[in-house]
Amino acid sequence: MKSILKISEAASLALHAMVILASKKEHSFSVKEIAELLKASANHLSKVLQRLSKAELVESLKGSKGGFKLSKNPEEITLMDIYEAIEGKFNVSSCLFGKVDCDSKCCVMGGLLSSINQQTDKHFRKTRLSDFLDLEFISEKL
Image 1 (tube, rainbow, N blue to C red):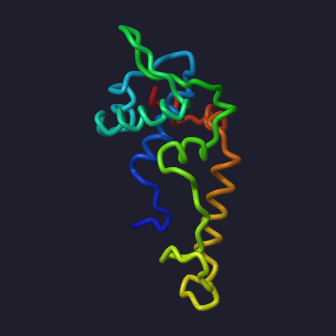
Image 2 (tube, one colour):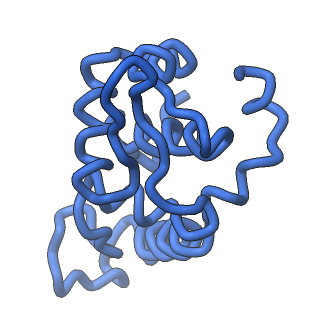
């Protein structure tokens, strides 16, 4: 079944990788370790982590114990911070065609798109990485 809400693979990788990094914030993870946990391309993940590093959400450590780790506390990082580091500013649109002055009364979607985007915006802004730290699926993977 397809999903109505679409999040790019890069943004999805970023969100999931950040939860992994938050799970052991003092440990640095290699790209290979995270890619194996996520069953993802190490090359694609590497590019995503570079963008997160540029946004100062993660830091890259060199050397034999190198890898990536969070540059801030998990309580300080929201899902929106991560999403916008990859995708740019989140726009709450109400039109599938991207029109600024769309009249939702004449649209087959009505106010649905606006409502979904507003809910996503609210969820991403209030949800922090620390909200995921006690989830069982993380500890099972690590």
